[in-house]
Image (cartoon, rainbow, N blue to C red; front, side, top):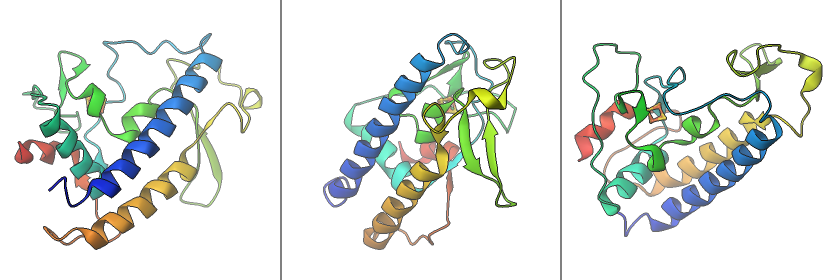
Length: 176
Ligand code: SF4
């Protein structure tokens, strides 16, 4: 599979690197407030992701020989890869997990700009402290991911997906 979709997987990895770089920069800027650390799993929900991301992660996990531990939790809302409060696919984790804890700027369902910030990090939330430069522009990166996914699903021959189809992360376990 990887041979046929290398171009899209490479583009996904570049986008992921771009997001990682910005996340590190923002974490440094908000270092005085961010208390994210191993063991805090409040953000680890049962997310769904685009096919390009899903199959890129499958490809990475197989290529790197990762053997993820699966949680046996009964909590259906919790991510299946959360084991003993730690992520067992940390290096391969999806984009949404790479921005956990940061102040996120996005447009909500009512077409209004909204700022979301972890209440454990930003205990004294003051909207005036946030600017374009010190927030994560979620819509910008989601748009890039959407376009990348569009290209991927057009080329993908194993299964048909529509532009808005998402796959639950937990389904990764069916791939290895
Ligand atoms: S993939 Fe890892 S970081 Fe993302 S929600 Fe699951 S356990 Fe948390």
